[in-house]
Image (cartoon, rainbow, N blue to C red; front, side, top):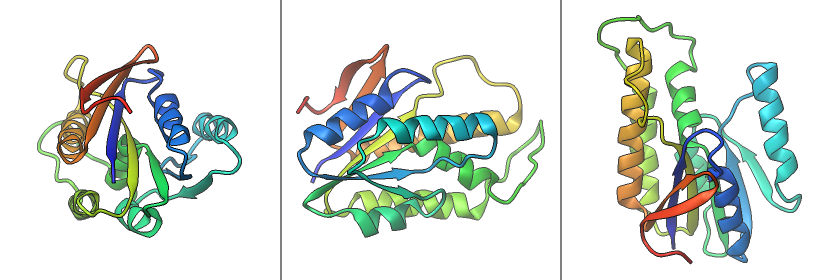
Length: 185
């Protein structure tokens, strides 16, 4: 069982690199997509990602119950690719339409804490290979607004916790992978 985290910024090539790793595994690939097509631009991005994936890959769309989806689909003879953790985090934070204040302390919803704990527990299980894609959002300036700062903080904490449980962590910039943890396969 190999667990791999692939990090990068927007349009860094992280998804393409993760997909290449999945294809090179020689195993059946199950792609868990966490995105929701809330508007035309996002729907277009989702359609582009779908078109790029091989037709024989199984696609599972799961916006919230990521740990359950992993538990269902992970197996020794397949690799599960999750794209992406930061969209999943957004789903957990904004699913019920909560409007967060611009200033002050942000109270994160219980589903966020439960979902995060369930994901980390699932990653400890030896059910099969998994590749997780996530955005590195903490390399810029401190964002404006309490919820944006809370999101950036929680994405960074999630990436750290996932990386600690993974055998490999890869940072992708300009389409080039830098192995932060573990060796290239």
